[in-house]
Image (tube, rainbow, N blue to C red; front, top):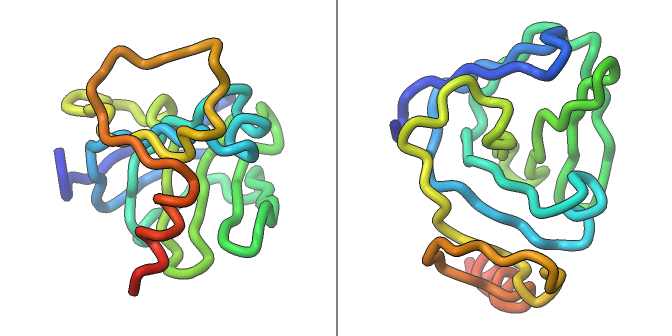
Length: 139
């Protein structure tokens, strides 16, 4: 599914998403912000920077940190995206996409802030917050 187009929608169907490409490797983010935003880990896929939305009048964007924005449907509350301010990369929650065939849980980040009440059985790469920031800031 890598580099294939992906479609999705929010719960009330007022916002539709079209990503021109998608990486089927699912990220699980356990950071404090994702936990507060989603009620658990954010399970998302990297859709790059070429993402289009229909129903944009129903999207509210929250400036959640110096590095990212988060978008949600202002009608039903569905989480629509986490968007990097550095390169405009969209991470779309895996569950709002129409077709998850071929998705694979690949990496868990911020594992040092993951609560103890859940654990994924999948074998994945794991990174603490320090390892994550070290990796993305190495350029």
